[in-house]
Amino acid sequence: PAFAGKTRVQQHKMVYDALQGRMGGELHALALQTSAS
Image (cartoon, rainbow, N blue to C red; front, top):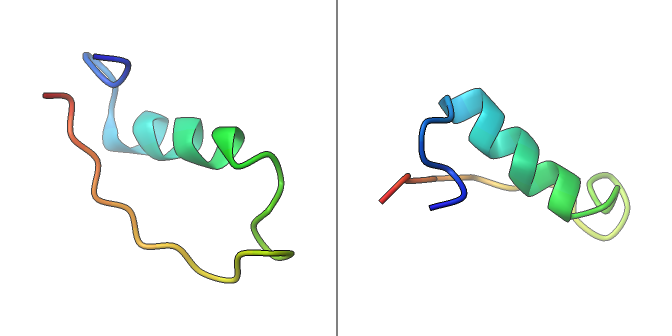
């Protein structure tokens, strides 16, 4: 339910924020498929 009412961009930002800066360091690429259900 954390994604309920959020746009796809907002959902993806929540995921990236949860990764706490690991993109470009430990993680090089990430494909996201998010859902509000």
